[in-house]
Length: 624
Image (cartoon, rainbow, N blue to C red):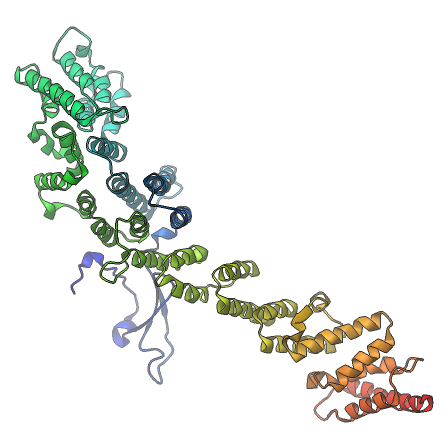
């Protein structure tokens, strides 16, 4: 399959080793590639790459203003998913929300450019792209969503031309800023542009600024009268199409009569205005007054004001042929042609090919889909889902869009639910707050394996940073007994060195979680032992310590420290351990292998413990 060069991104890398050894690529998130020279990782003995090239493209949507656009359009996108979009008024309302977001972004970019906040050419190009997107979206809104009846559709198209192609307003503003507007070089161009847009009231008001339009009856006052009397279709007031067409034909008949009577032959400008009002086709072929789409609307205003939307395909083709044919039009014109042909698939296809991002294609196809204009599947291919996934893939390249990306992926029923877990695993968990947000999303979508994976990842990270209390809490949430066991052992080791518990708040409120592992159970019971000591409940503390020692659940490295805890109890006036318990403690002490220990202090403490046990045994035998 051949691919046109204009659709291919070419990026040059300044690395001669790529020409010699070839390249190996690895995909990153979004439009992102890591490129190295040679077959790294694929062949034995491959040398480490001297350079890793990070290649990114289509990053224009990552500016502050564009991020704002994507966040706001995301809210509308979610509203579309949750709404009953079969309702036409609601559909139009949602479409206008998208369009208002585009307009706000264009205005903000324009303001920044005018105030020199940004001066780069990329921002200017981005503004032009957004303007084109707004024009296309507005046209699709008129033709596909509003679906206005004959007579109304042309008024909507005239408003579309007026709003987006502002040559007439620009000319008018320049003229009226002078003391004598009628002498300005753009005076007649402004009037003609206003008339071509169907704005006869504005054209009449500008014409009345001419001195000759204030005197007795003359060609100027005659033209002013024709402009003033031009009928407009009042659909909202209950006017019938037949009534309007009758009035319009009568009005244009009057225009033709005056033109043929030669009322305007003495003035070229008035004569050209009269030709426009009479619908003379030659006058609508002048490219000075706009593109083929502007001239198409102008020609319909003065030749077929009751045109229906189904007839626009024919009229757009005629206008394009007049302006040189389809071979001489650009990418933007192709999209407009597709819209006038009322082909939503072709509109989306052209938008996908012509723009350097997927924003317009994804959101427009989604709205088309919910409006029932495109099928759920076409030839076993989900058109809308593919575009939304492509847009979501572009969002992945920016870390701040992770939550937005999940919503777009989840909106794709066939593949999105498979992609969401994979994407969540790739989200960098830079803080506990972010991890909590990701967990909340996983819980909402019932992604339990991903929840455990996130908790384990946070636990490992906290443990690596020495935050054992935080690491323990995350391990409990992940229900990972092995990890909890290792953390508990580290806590005991830290206690053996420092002699005090650093995480008492966590240990005191473990609850049923203590059963996750034997080491965690031991740690909790050991903490209870110290609490009993603090409360001077020596008998209860002794019984608990005896159970901990004889159960053999304590880590091997901690057993000497655990046994030495009995020394203080053995020195009490009250007999804590009977002769049988004392014998068991002596057996446990004899079972400790101190050959690998080099801690002299621990050896001294164990010798003291042995002496205390001997004295306690004699005391226990006498008491028995």
